[in-house]
Image (cartoon, rainbow, N blue to C red; front, side, top):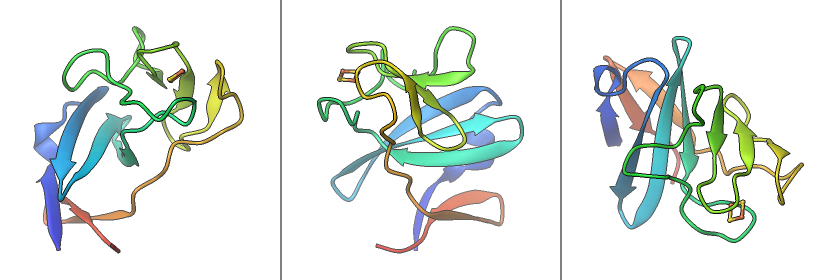
Length: 106
Ligand code: FES
């Protein structure tokens, strides 16, 4: 069982990056829900963030890749604009356990 963080560590409309067991991941807190993805743009395979823990666009409505500006839906990881339109971020399975984001699976 790998604890990513406490839910209080990510403010609403916020995001946070992690290095866990050699994997680059990030989590987003959006409208009371949480989402975890691998930190890898499907376009070029590079990390997504603009600055540490900054994965969202200016309005905080989409995940945005810093390299070429691709926009991804927060709830599905689907790219809806940019060079990887129609591709998806890789979702990472997790559970909420006692107020913490806990990775499940491998
Ligand atoms: S590397 Fe992300 S849009 Fe090109």
